[in-house]
Amino acid sequence: MAKRYCLKTGDRVAIAATARKVSPQEMEPAIKLLQHWGLEVVIPEGLYAENHQMAGTDSHRAAVLQSLLDDEGIRAILCARGGYGTVRILESLNLTPLKQNPKWIIGYSDVTALHSHVHNLLGMETLHATMPINIPPDATAVHYPAIESLHQALFAGSCQYSLQCSTHLLRPGQAEGAVVGGNLSVLYSIMGSPSDIDTAGKILFIEDLDEYLYHIDRMMMCLKRSGKLRKLSGLIVGGMSDMHDNAIPFGKTAEEIIWDAVKEYDYPVCMGMPFGHIGMENLALILGRKTTLNITPNGNVTIEQ
Image (cartoon, rainbow, N blue to C red; front, side, top):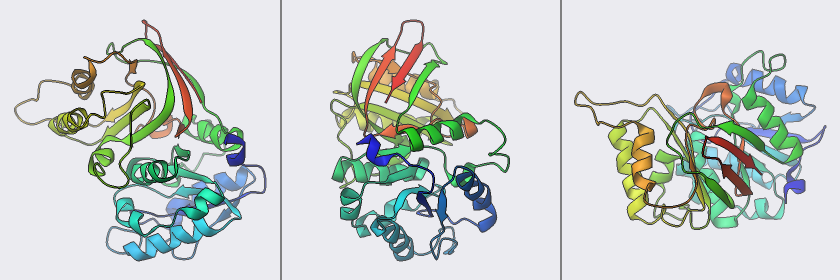
């Protein structure tokens, strides 16, 4: 499957705004980077539409994305940015063309809804990675881990990392399984819907940004009570960035909240991994890909996809 996704010089790739609106100035660095990689960048008509916070109405955003899914000549679709709104267009999409003509769908944060929808309905691979809104003006000259890993995933179709846990909260061991997940808040919001993911036998990946600690606890309790944490093969926790607390402290960090939810199980767990809302350290991760996860007692983590 991976070889079917791999890009080569001259391939056409497109940018789609599935959620919050974007401007031509914001997309310019990403367009230049993709062209620097030898790719032909497709800017669909209506990419810069506006409807309050969003990049046009729901029907408009769905129609633009559908046109890119339908186009057999486009080899990858980069979601322009997150924010909110992707979940509002999922029911309007026809994913049959994607199954017939696989292509990368790339993004993170709010794009978790689209990743999960594709994985649940088609069982296909997608790419959790940095987005055009994140690409800095000097991206063609400076080596950024997020960009280098995106290039590796796109052109080689693989991700291999040797990392270190940034917290003592870990459980050593080895796991194999497809990676599923993404932004915790989005995963929580699609539970019980047609986009909800099956986690049994999978390596679950979660990350989040700008949440209150008690919200993290609420979401983890929901995942636990619904059985989504019970039969995992492994758990990867990415950045839990810019967390908030109340005047009366919750009493635990986000990582401690997550640990409390999974400590009774026996699968490998690593936290503080460089995936998610962590700027240009946000490494690419192939969702839906069978993955080997190995965690040593001293916190060394290897991920092979």
